[in-house]
Length: 458
Ligand SMILES: [Ca+2]
Ligand SMILES: [Ca+2]
Image: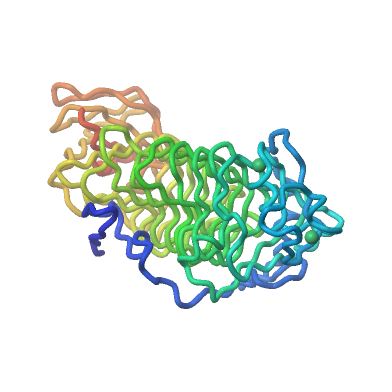
């Protein structure tokens, strides 16, 4: 494992997770695009698993998505690249008999007030996936006032030319404060959706080449976005308030299968990451070099197990936490299972604080929590006695002991917690037959130990 130093905005930072492709807009990174069938314009595709994949628009018909606010309507009626009325058009009557996406973005920009861009479902039926090809710059990619762009109820795939430079910022529309982008398939994005105090939901990002969503302050990413490709799903810079909720990273909810993804979430400021599914082929799930005392919170996410219960596995540890400085709270309610390596790997420095609380960590081939360096971690508590009704033990450092039951030496079932103050602790808790008791200790600074050794239930 390699720590990678990267330079961003003049500051030398050490990534919490090794991350070779997540920063530096001037770097050309992805020469070869993965092929996954998403450039096909037919009704569906067949994955390498032989599973038929319904069109994204069909899938979304069974999903609850956020709706546009009330605004002036613009209904796109052609997939063609048209620019009737020129770049000063401010009304649909200037756009000729059909309205293109180019014309709609132009009018939304020029017409004062909130515009709602939707797609005619007779031209873009949700069952058929109609492609809008983007071969270069979009008019008014830099939108300046709130709008809604909704493919909900239609089958719209925006497919950027794969030869476009990844720094083509004018090839992708921005998402300014108060906006909503929802229900679209976005393929081969050459740069990013700049999302500022706005929401992106129900979008399929495939063949991501760079960063799909670059988030400013108070962005909401989710629910129901899907991310795959050789780039990064979601990234924030030095802005607070990002929420990443209810998405699928490196995972296709239509087939409940893994999709390749280099990096899911890259954070430079604290964020809330919850209720997401992370597939088993993500190189780096969440990385963070957050500053200050606010933690990045990861709760109620799942690694290694799909929402339908199928096992997704992984080719390495699900979460790797190291860097300097950063503060994380991992829990409650994450499922971290079925890794071919550890569940979580910690490499804490002197000013890193990784609290791990009330998760379900089990069936990983390596340790549930592995410490590459224990210098700055509290020692794990020791379990001395397990009876039918309670568990007791000792601790070298004071702190909160969390008790788990596991078939091995991890922590599948969270049973409760108790303070260990004078080197001793005891907790009422029934460890099921066939399970072992295990425990962690979290010290007063918010650093959690690895799991204790397991002790079998009587
Ligand atoms: Ca037109
Ligand atoms: Ca407008």
